[in-house]
Length: 448
Image 1: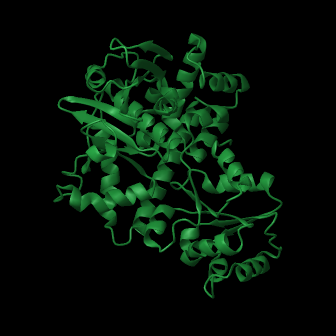
Image 2: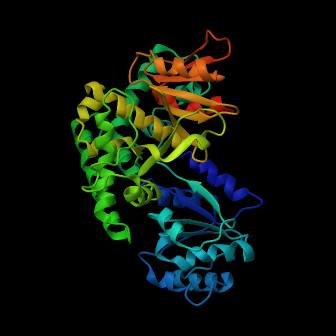
Image 3: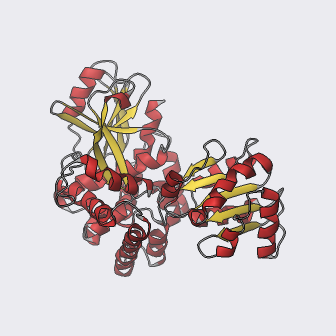
């Protein structure tokens, strides 16, 4: 399964200033598969140590953190020499060996020629709890498959080529647009978790068997995430985390065809009515990669972050397929895009997921001012770039007009069911951009 992050790994390998690489991402987004497949073609040998399954490997780090000794002992465990000049060392489930995590600093300083990747479940939480020094590692954020990666996984060469051309053009035929729209509806069902996508494709896409298997697989993954909460929540109340996570799709569903409201704290957990008591569970879910938290600003000038509040934000699920499964949205309704007023929050969650994945280091905001609100706001050079989300073909957007008249951004975007187009705004400053929802990730280019 081709991932765009493969090119990031290639760039990391040849970098003159390469450091050990930590890969972050929620469980089951494909971190282990990505590294192992990359290792097969980019290195002579990939030495994999899973610290959850191999406690002897974790124990190697107990004596001291001297890289030469560690490499020698790990070689003994595998029965193969580890060549620092040609091999890849992969520390999987590294959160189970905190000293191995700390050792990356020493590898960076004393054995920089050895290529090391590290990944693990809930690694974001482990990093927050460790004294791991910043500045001695490189980072890669891996998300569920993007829609483009889903198209590639479906495997039709002509469709893949047409989509890659659409990435860089405002001219699209109605035939191509309809084909991408149909595939996007499949993506709403599957989401981007690799196991779900691979099983869907293997079972004849669109068939009853494939659709049923998607929901079974997604439910198993949901159960695994809940098991993680129970096992790894530590000092944070596991029940509060579970209820907070369950409340996200419930609150999104209440929005129906309107814009998703800011996250409401009342009634998430009985007896808790404010942000202070839920900050811990929300932070846990964010670090675990299970939610996407989008601050809402009340003013759209630079820097946008200065006009946000800690308790004023929207929350989305990290994967639109898991969202549908948690709400038990009928699979056939998703494939036909016929589920009434609830299209709005599904489309909005998809856009949040696409923007977070395509701009992982860029801040993403929402905007609310007076009675106007816009789903997403991207940081531009002088003002925010507004992104309005419409679930179908209607693109009337009163709030967008209000925003454009007040802030006069260079670009103003609407994501909808229409093919791409651009037109000049009446104010002579703003260019109106129409993008189909499946090209949401392209929105970032208008901030450059």
